[in-house]
Structure formats: C-alpha cells, structure tokens
Image (cartoon, rainbow, N blue to C red; front, side):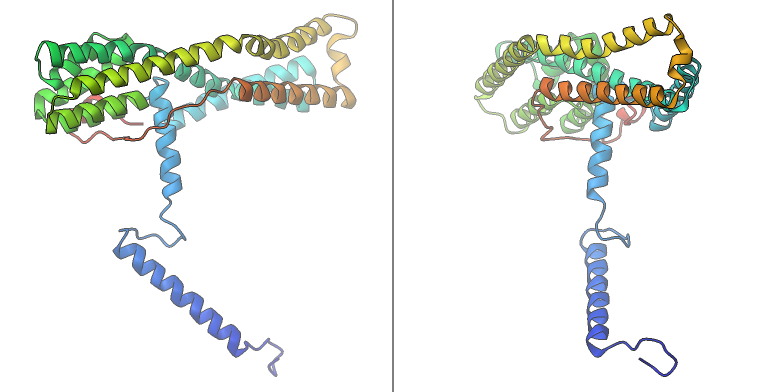
Length: 319
C-alpha cells in the first residue's frame, strides 16, 4: 500500500499484465497479416458469418431470398402489436395479452419454416428425375454438360426455374461453367444441388468415361434418401396430429369459455391471468417438444457458393 492509500502493483502482477498485453499485440499482428482481419476482438467473427450464411440459406430455401431482415422484423412487430391489442381486448390483462403477442410473433418464422420444408421436399422429389435427364442428354445424346444441366433445370419444377434462368444468363454471357454453377448453387442453397454441380464441374473440366456411373450412383442415393424420408414421415402421422390437437383444443375451449358465464371478466383476476400465461407456456412447450420428435436429419451444404458477379448480379439478389 502506497502512502496515498492506493494499492501498489506487485512485480508479479506487473509482469503478468505486460505478458498479456504483449500476447494480445502479437495476436492483432498475426490476424492482420495472415487473416487480413483488422478488428480488435478476440476472433474474426467467423461464427457470425456462418450464422448469417445459414440465415441467408434459410431465406433462399424458403423462397424469400428478396426479403430483407428489416422487412421480416417489421412484419413481426406489426403482428405482435395487433395481437397484443386483441389479447388485451379478449382477456383484459397484460400477461395474457403479451403471451398472445409472442405467439403471433412466431407466425412469420413458422410460416417460413413450413415454406422451406415444402420447397426442400419438392427439390428432393425433383432431383432424381432431373439427374436422370442430365445423364441421358450428356451421355446418350452427346450434348455438352452445361447445356444438359440447364435444359433439365428449365424443364423442372416452377419453384426452381428462376435459379436456372439466372444460371443460363450467366452461361450465355461468360461461358464460364464454374461461375454458372456458383450462381446456381447460391440461388438454390440445396445440398443435392451442390453435389450435382460439383460432380458435373469435375466431369466438364477433367472429362472421363465414368460420368454415367457417377450420375447413376447419385440418382440411387437421392432415391433411397427420398424413400426413407417418406417412410419416416408416414410413421410420424400420429405425432403430427397430436401436435395440432394440443393447440387447437385449448384455444377452442378458451373461446367457448368467453361466451359462458362471466366470460371476459373471469379472465381479469390475477390468478386467471397467471393461469392463462401458464397455459400458453405449456402449449408452447408441447409444440416444441413434438417438433423435436418430428425432426428428421437435414443434409448440410458441403460446397456452398456465392454469386460471382456477371449476369447474376442483376438477376439474383443474395439475401
């Protein structure tokens, strides 16, 4: 302790502080030179980039690639405000009204997840036929691999054609198959599309006589995966029914209760408000628990890509 009452730093503490500052300085120099990163945090925020990339893939897979995050937040905010007002008018208390608002705020995300699921199922069902068409055109008819891919895609489902149109524009302008596949992979954000594109890129650049064999193996793998998922979803029918039953029945009973006896006044006591809040919590818990039972393994993208410029810059707007 110094004479003025301030604590004195011991030599060991001073040495530790100097060592830490030196190590941090070395870290900043290393990340600036090697990683080309000029931040002052403890990491280059790679996880943040991965999260943003996953969110962008989610929007593309749901067919909402042109929707901005601010627009999605604005829609949720409006729904929450309207739902809170409605909940307060029905239940006459803030706890229940806020629970109604929270439930309404989850609707856009739930709707986007359902759109994503349906579009991914559509892609899984379409790819085996499209790969077979690519194989026939490239191997049997002798057409070029890029043209076979684009023709098969343009004859595919309506939801996938915009991606192939953007890829076709890139191909007509640049005739660079790698850039064309980059546009296609970014526009579809689909694991099967990544695998097909990488297989065709290798076949286009290196050539060889095993293109037919590789495409046949890819078709067999996609068909087996599709059939397995259909069987699993058929076995989950009971869980899916129970999931909706847990939500519909309590809401129906609450609506009936509003028209019996004291109706809305019965919900205005503190105990009633807490009971309604607990009921919403139990419903949400059951819903997410059932979602875990219904969850099937999802393929991860192995060769993701972003548009590399050219015609795609004006045709496809990455989220």
